[in-house]
Amino acid sequence: MTTSQSEKDRVVIFDTTLRDGEQCPGATMTHEEKLEVAELLDQMGVDIIEAGFPIASEGDFAAVHEIAKRTRNAVVCGLSRAAFNDIDRCAEAIKPAERKRIHTFLSTSPVHMKWKLQKEPHEVLDMVIAQVTRARNHVDDVEWSAEDGTRTEFDFLCRCIEAAIKAGATTINIPDTVGYTVPEEYFDMFKRVRENVPNSDKARFSVHCHNDLGMAVANSLAGVKAGCRQIECTINGIGERAGNAALEEVVMAMKVRNDVLPFWTGVDATMLTRASKLVAAATSFPVQYNKAIVGRNAFAHESGIHQDGMLKNAQTYEIMTPETVGVKQTSLVMGKHSGRHAFVHKLEEMGYHLQSNQLEDAFVRFKALADRKKHIYDEDIEALVDEEIAHAQDRIKLVSLSVIAGTRGPQRATMKLDIDGKQMIEECEGNGPVDAVFNCVKAMVPHDAVLELYQVHAVTAGTDAQAEVSVRLSENGRAVTSKGSDPDTLVASAKAYLGALNKLLIKRHRGNGETLVVGQRRIHSTEVG
Ligand code: KIV
Ligand code: ZN
Image 1 (cartoon, helix red, strand yellow):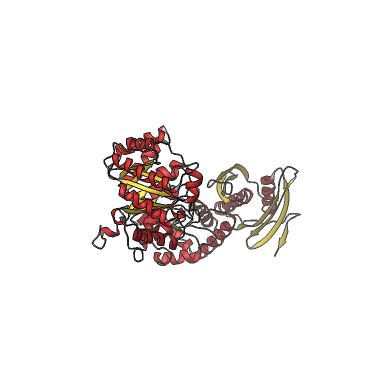
Image 2 (cartoon, helix red, strand yellow):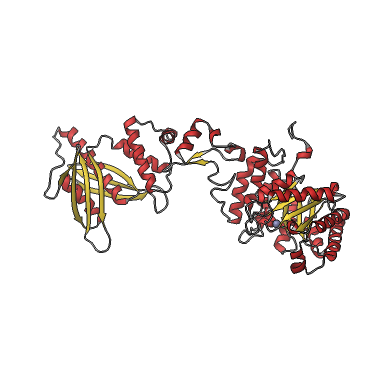
C-alpha cells in the first residue's frame, strides 16, 4: 500500500480460473497443471483462489485439497451448492488451508427457481439460511452467491441477502450469471441493495460477471464504483460460454485509470503475462492475438504512422509500458504498413548500416516482400539485406521472371535481365522449371561454367516462407557460390544463379584481365527498352 492508497479502496481479487474457468468446455487441466496455476496465483498476490468444486469429481476434490495444503498467502476457497453433503465435502477439501472459505450458491431468479430448482421463493429463502448456517459450522469465512442475481426480482434479492448475512455470510456475491446486465444497471442494483438491505454493512459485496455481451470487465468495474470490494475473475477471461471478467484487465484498468477508478489490488501486475501464458498452455486455450493486456499484439505496432510515433515517444501509442505487465519490450512488427523510419530502426537493431542508395533499394524490396508475405521475420530482413549488400555491384540483374510449370510440360520460362544497363528478354524450355530458368540465363549470358551445387531451404517456417537457394558454379578451376532468397523458389533460384555468374565475371576479370562479354544476343533473345 502506498501513502495515497487507503484500505477502503482496496479491491480483493478472487480468482476463479480453476473453478469457473476450468469448467468451460475444453479447458480441463490436469492435477499438476492446477497446482502450478494455483502456485503462481498465490505468488502474484491474488487474495482468494477458488480452487474447484469438490463435490463435482474425485479429481476436483483432490486438487482443492492439495492446493489447500500448499497455498501460503491466499485464502483457498471451494464451491458448493446448497445441499449439505455438498457443503460438507467442500469443507473437507479445504480443511488443510491456513486461510479457507466456503463459497455456497443458490439460484434466486424466477426462471431458475421455476425451471432449475422447481422451488417456491419461500423455500429458496429457507435454503439460503440453511446453507449459510451449515457452511458457517465449518468455517468463519463464508461467501453466499445469488445465482442469476441480475435477473432476480429486487425485493426478493434483498430478502435473500439479508437472510444470508444474518446466517453468517461474510461476502455477498451477486453474479451476472448469464452476462445480461450493463454497467449502469449493475451499478444501480448494488447501490440500491446496499442501501436497502439493513445489515449490508456486515458483509463485503462482490461482483462476478460473465462476458456474453462483452461487458464483463465494464460491469465488474461499475460494481466496484457502487461499493463492491471483491472482483471474481479469471486469467485470460476464460470461463463458461463467452467467459468471465479477465483478471488482467480489471487489475490494469484500475492501475492505468486510477484517476477515474481510484481503487487498488494486491496483484503484482508484472506477473500477468506469465500467468496468462501458463493458463493458456495448461488449458490449451489460445489467447486471442488482440486480447487486452496479454494478447500478443497488445504491445505490437505495425502501421508506419504508429511505428514512427513510437520511435519518437512511446506514449504516442501506448497507455502503459509493456514492462508493467511483464512483457520485455514493445515490438515494432515489420510488415507492409511499416514505414522507412521503422525499417531503418530495425536494420540498426540488427547491426546493419546501409548507404542511402542501398537502403532505398532494400526498403523497396522489403515492401515488395511484405506485400506477398504475411509475416516478416528478422531472418527475412537479414536475407534481403545480405542479398542487397552482396549484389550491389552486380552487372547482371534479374528484372522479371515468369514460369509455366506443372504436370503437362514442357516447362517454359520467360526472363528479363538487366545487363550493364541494357534490358534483354528470353524465353526457354527446360527439363523442369529450374532447368528452363537456367536455360534463359545461359541464353542471355553464354558461359561454360558448370553447376556443381543447387540446394534449396526455407528461411523460416510456413508455406509462405522464403526459399533460400544456394548455387555453386565452377569454371576453369574457379569456383564461386551464391545465394538467392525469395518466397518464390524459382525466383530465388534465378537470383542465386545470377549471383554466382556475377561473381565469376569479377573473378575472370581480376584473374586474366579479360574483357567481359556478357549479354551476347542469341537467336531468341530480344533487347528491350
Ligand atoms: O456465474 C455464476 O453465477 C457462478 C456462481 C456459481 C457464482 O459461477
Ligand atoms: Zn460464473
